[in-house]
Length: 55
Image 1 (cartoon, rainbow, N blue to C red):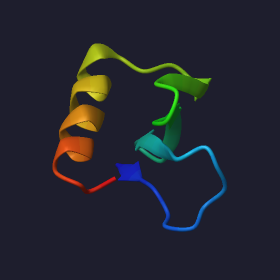
Image 2: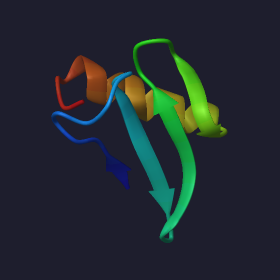
Image 3: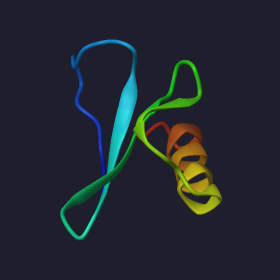
Image 4: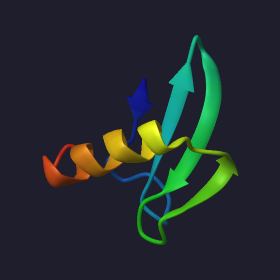
């Protein structure tokens, strides 16, 4: 599950969960993990969501 909130605190970021557990909190503006770590698959999906304008 990928979650981001309009109006959330900066930097712009997305929370990624699996089975209810936070996997990574990814800083979209600086392209780095704020908490946890991202696999290459997660990064690919984040990039796709950014390109589609969904986050």
